[in-house]
Amino acid sequence: MSSLKSIYSQALIASSLAILQIPAFADTISFDSANEIRGRVVGPITSGQAEDWMDGTQTKAYYLETERPMLLNDPKSSCGAQRIERLPILSEGMARYKNKYVKISASIQCVESKLGSYAIDRVDAIEDATSSALPPAAANLPNVSCNQPKRGWNQECASNDWRILIDAKGCSAKKGAYGKVYADDEATVKLRRSLPPAQSDVEAKLGDGQFVCVSATARGPGSSEPQWYYVMAIPVKSVKACAAKSFCAKPGDLPIEWMRSTNGKRCRLSARGQYEGDCAAGWVNAKEFGEFSMGL
Image 1: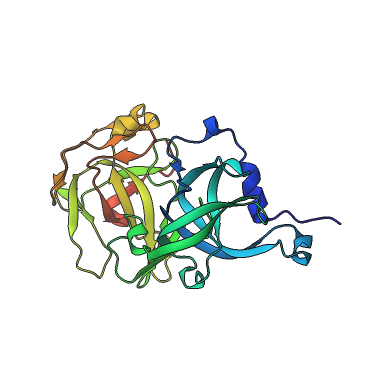
Image 2: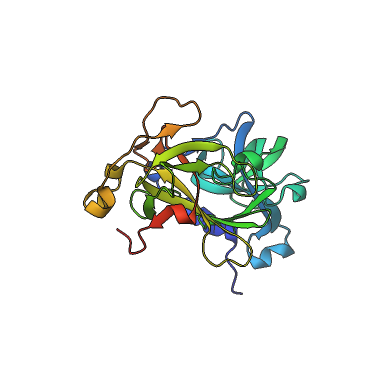
């Protein structure tokens, strides 16, 4: 009888990577006490071979797509070392958390009889943390809800009549959408924390011609083109393709007028490829932004 590979067995194959190949940012889990884990609840998903329903070893459960990869290696079990990005939750009552981002305190064990891998076998506490998981572009929007069809895909959000598309990669130094902001009858371009018609606070003010990257766009009813862009002012030299082109590199990094207190750390590209420090970001009207449509 031909058997169907379960979703979890596919993850198990991927988890057989050598320990040295596991990224340094993977979480290490204790098997002697509860662990605090964050992630999104999905499912329910059936795992096990198609014929396993006959002997009761097929499992149907909700899964936790973890915020970061975890290195699981219980020396007292036969599961061995595994790199895990999704865990079955064997506790009941998970249906109401479906598609929500949660923070849980839970016990993880090797379930040898049914899965041959690790699972959350007991949830001590669970908290809906969806609002705290919102991306920066959506964090200050009213009545906002977000959905990510699949891990790694762009996130889709809705706020009142706005349709918002958030780039899964965020601002990138290698492959991203770039452009400049242009002051329209004003000396500076305001970075707003929210979208109209809300009375939006201003995060910062950028100079005319400041180089920026785009991490999200917003479209109103019936509009096929973005009407607002969520941009971040990043160092010109951090994007090599920009630094080599005069139309992009000039006038360089301009002074930023902050409307809030900062930590005094300049915006920079970290070793992990993410921008950190005081990186001015906010929404600008499409009339105030010019994208390098032909790329860099």
